[in-house]
Length: 432
Image 1 (cartoon, one colour):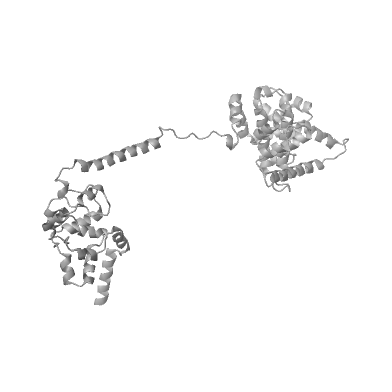
Image 2: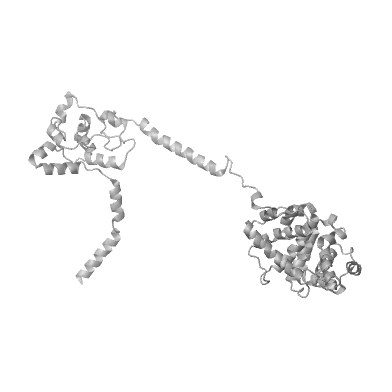
């Protein structure tokens, strides 16, 4: 069975006469439109549909119409019309070389060609019920193999000698005692030399196709028919099933979500169970992130703590200093509550870990709680120094830590090892 046989069956439907004629025209058109013949097709995909349409027109039936032929060819209307015209020209060129005189012998042979086909021979010798359409496909494969061997160059491809010889050889493989060479040649009018010669060539050089035919003939008819009918269009192929809820990928994701949830729960549950002194004794976090706990710590100083606040960084009675400084978040650290200032004066007090420590808060707290740092009154600095120096000092105290700049500095810095080697090279160069 040819590779386009399923398309021909789809177009011709139940009309066996149209199907047989389309197969014959397809075989002739394949030979006549090969490269180098002058009728080479630009889009060979439309050749089977064009042959089926021409066969329907020759038989004068409406089995195949132009619309269905163009749709099954997978070509646009313009490309299909060009392909159809090229196939018509190739077939007309073949018919133009035959004499038009019906009294001549060649015209009789051309009429005999149209009557002989593998389907007619299978029906004549009652092989359809035993082997079905497989017998025709085996004959077509054997015919292609015969011409691939290069032994049939002196015989026309559309000659009945080829079909009769190949049919006799295939039938002799499957049923050796069914046909006799002399009676077969006599009944079909073929020459004995050609049929016997084709049979001898295939017996010597056709071992592969012989083994293939024998292997397929031993299989059940339904299995082979099912295998040959699985060629469908890409749109009719079974779709790939979507992954179910129990797929390994989704199980993996759910497991990851569970682990993340448990770790997150552990991270948030640690501060709640931590034991330590009351929150009033802890220094406030100086990170810019606002939280309810920090708002509770920012309380206004009472009368009992005014004396203590006099020794802190900024006195609360110095309104002129407060007005001179800008109202920024960093100033709030300087104007902290009484509990904040007490914690700044006594850095030796124990401090529990913050629930969510960050690099910014750690740096600021460590800078405030260092024992070597002395408490300075900004009012004294403002009196002893001009306002410009006081502003400069306040700016340095209020400088916020940004790790992005440190990362940029780290990435922009050269390799320390290379700098060290360069310094050594410079020293050696200078010493010389």
